[in-house]
Image (cartoon, rainbow, N blue to C red; front, side):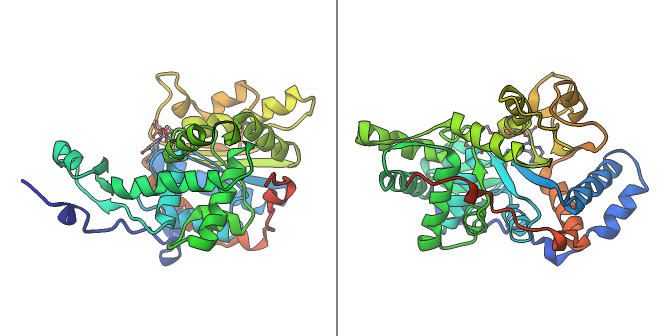
Length: 342
Ligand SMILES: NC(=O)c1ccc[n+]([C@@H]2O[C@H](COP(=O)([O-])OP(=O)(O)OC[C@H]3O[C@@H](n4cnc5c(N)ncnc54)[C@H](O)[C@@H]3O)[C@@H](O)[C@H]2O)c1
């Protein structure tokens, strides 16, 4: 069946609002059950402990395609209500998905049986059952170039660059964005593989044009800054949605601190929601218990939950939001501890 572009990009993905439903009774029931329902209930309790621990800095890790799938508003609520202090993410989530929406573009409800050749002809990109207008993505690529062009030449951490993206949205934003919300709350966002995203295209263009007057993203600086946060925090807790590079990057700060001669404790709390299991020995499914053997995550207050994030992240976040423990948390504003270059 042939569709035109307008027909295919008709229905926007809407972001779930955790304020509109209270998951506490469901999670309490899950706690009396077995398998992943009980694991999810335990992870909710561990998150509660993190939120009630005055000495705990909470780091949210993001991988996969979470914002395009309708989870953006959850991340915004976690930021607004001091339920997280730092974000480590893939570039796709930060740039292609969140910043993209902040510029006023949308993700659309699609379908898996779509004719991908036809989508290619129409310049529509597909993420499983979601469609994106590639023309809009190109504007996003060029906006990152525009931001890079406006900066003093030099090496910046992804955190510094993403802060500039937040500043850009402050002036030019057209819709809600967690990059913008983090900018307002001085919450650092790190992307260890920043160029592997829409920003990469803009930055390649920027460097080819500006040559020795260009900026560069310094991933070592990212690691140093994140390690600095770890070293300056009494305790840390990880809330990981998916696996990928953010999971390892944040866990490794304990080892980096050790290399610097600082006796930083392992991450005290850790939760991972993932579809990956441990059989292939790969990172995304490696258990948090296993991370203990590497000296990265403490044992006892860690929980793996096996399930798809669009289903289980809203439940965990709604539980924590409605429990209201976040009301006693103070904002950390870690961005303020780093001196901006430009
Ligand atoms: N995801 C995209 O659409 C996309 C687009 C452009 C660039 N990239 C780039 O590709 C690189 C790799 O991305 P990645 O780390 O997100 O890889 P990924 O999408 O493979 O996710 C990593 C792991 O996280 C888990 N995961 C992902 N989505 C999940 C979900 N919905 N529920 C539960 N678990 C889930 C899975 O175990 C998966 O193996 C990054 O640098 C990213 O910026 C990704």
